[in-house]
Image (cartoon, rainbow, N blue to C red):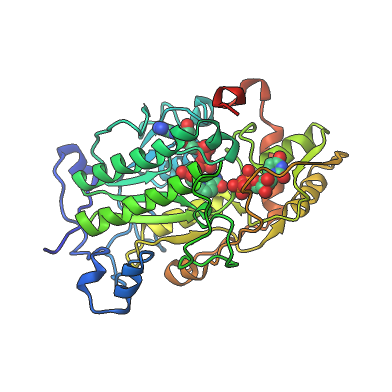
Length: 394
Ligand code: NAD
Ligand code: UDP
């Protein structure tokens, strides 16, 4: 049976009567039914592709005078770093935004500028519980992203990845919404293939301290692809690599926020290990653009890598931060946490081919913008979301 995408207009929203705007848009249907090269890729379990289809109207990306379609968008984890930036951009594009969050790793102040906006709704809810609403698109971003935070309550983290994705895919199925699942470059673990293409299955320790984060996201991807195969849910799976920028919680414990805060305060910069491990850092504006373009395209359900292909060692990052802050901080080396990946770098060939997307912001520019953001924060108003490690049994 041909599955048709339903988009709703503002007037349709008020009457609550969905109308078919876009003509029949075949979505990532079961590659098993197709005699195409995609079949073997699907059965290999990593990729489902569909032939490119020109869609009449796009919701999030538009060229020239084309008017984007008004949509009702649910953003889970909408008060967090990526979620809040996404909500702001969606409001600016004219959409109605439902921001769902339980403030596990964020706080209301991160979205206070949007509270009261006529098209913004804040919903305090935990995605591990069922949730019902009417919407056209879902960005499922809810999950702690920083290693110290997702390791703080690891069982909760795995629950969020599994139940959160289950509930959001179930919601997408019921209301025929398109859902973008925020996956991660962590699914590649400590990768033996470098840079990492989407076809690489990874090198993950299933019982280590990072497993709640990376195995959690792997099972979330499994659920998404089973919803595609079993229920024809309109899924997009994005593997997000290290992203930074304004909107980060100053105490979230990730390397960029730690280094900038330390440099601003003139404290030692804490490098874990010898600093030779590498990461590829993507500025938030580039990532949000990539997520919206990926949500708006018809060529692939993913998984697709989104990240900056320029790779830096952690020591190089420390030097860039010290310079950007004009800081006299010294570097202090601390023990490397277990299972800390030695290298991480996305192969973004697919994102370039499918959407023509690639990051534009250099690390130096992005760090300068983030330093500016961090300097104007009133740190007395921020609380470390995971303050007492002993509670987690460390
Ligand atoms: P974040 O911690 O800043 O935001 C996550 C948000 O989800 C927070 O507001 C938190 O309170 C909320 N949340 C957590 N558990 C929840 C629950 N059970 N119910 C409702 N809300 C809940 O993280 P982020 O950097 O914004 O990451 C967003 C998503 O992107 C996550 O899924 C993360 O795994 C993924 N991701 C991010 C990065 C990155 O570098 N920022 C990299 C890879 C993947
Ligand atoms: N790191 C560090 N000092 C810090 C925080 C992190 O050297 O204060 C290192 C960490 O060990 C890892 C890299 O920086 O090798 C990136 O860490 P982050 O927590 O940002 O995310 P990850 O990429 O490991 O998921």
